[in-house]
Length: 575
Image (cartoon, rainbow, N blue to C red):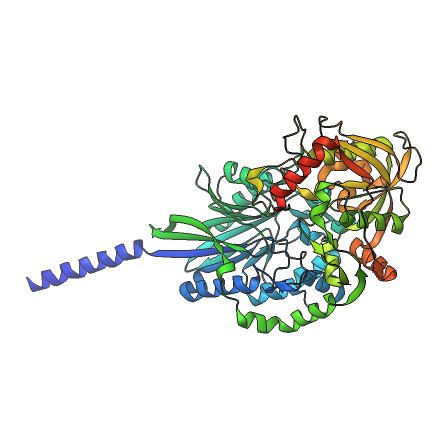
């Protein structure tokens, strides 16, 4: 009897152990940063003030999770890290004899993988090829193809194993790069359409690696953006809804927070930009019959602005901070009056007109186009420093001169103002084309469309009739030098490289120039970025009094002027 009880007890014990083995659980935390744009340190080098979001705060959040969950934390970055703060410019183009600071931050925080962003391609091969070498974690981009080998230029995916769970991470980049950047910056590469690339690689990974979890790491927004017959700029939604196999898709590029679970069960997370939030996916898996099965999956966007600064992080990078401070604090001139980018939305304004006038002076062009690249930047009266130049001109665009007809110039402006201003039906209507749902969109701030596509012009005098329908708002009166404006005449037009390569589609859809004809229209391309030449001109001038050209205005004045005051108050709170 005793022997039988012992045998039964042993059998029950073995059965219990077997059940416990079958019910083994693992919880993973997969974290994503995206569109950090140089927000590494808790200082805004544009304004020499504290920065609300930074990797110094992200580091605190990540360290706490690692203390709580050990190896079951996976840390990913989704690109657009090489451009934004002056920090990036300094280590991309000036202090190039050390590891790129963007790579140093990723290495210090022990990221597991990283993808390319479109702004990481923008500095050109010399910068991003060095950056790839400097980064110690795998760089991903399954649809970035080396045209010599027809293979991915960087790794298409990686497998990360945690507590016996195999996690596949597939990286993709928006294929719209050729619409924004000159081919010299991405020579030898091509960018494949994302949906078909995702379908190929998810099937490849399932067959070859048999992972337990499949994640997408996509530098591409949810939907919208540029749509052509070949691809969509923002394809994350399309992949989540139509490509079987993904459990989680981390994405970015559009600077809009998303925490969505699709009808087919894919968790989709976008933490927005500037290291303000971290996408945090919690995945619980249970082992059943020798296989891991996801039993719980949820996401949050953790606001790291509430986190304390990681002081050890700050101490480690203090020499880099000091280097950048010394660079941006160099005095280059004196402004006798302040200029603000917010003024540019409501008429001819000193901020963008100053840039346009320098474009004309530097190139000898007839007409210049420019848009406010910063929504609400100000350069104060008084001494002007290198840091102010990053407020005046935010991106590393080059300066182009292109041949355009008068008709094309008008078409370009027609599309710009159609994106910018409303078709007023009564004096009480909005004059700006607004969208309340876009108030928190950090690229639109309440405008319906992207404000960096709101080009105005210098070199011509014109009116914008806000009562006219799209395509009929702009009436060009004359050249600003008093000569007649002729729609059939060829003119030299100064503009930035983003626009000249087709960015915003103002030259293609607006002016009607075929995309494959843009290169043939370029008659001048600067060697260095436009900010460099603007800085040189201010140093030569010494003391500067920026003034509005007053070469264009919204009409009819009796409708436009009250509406401008109303909408300015709505957007900026100005009286």
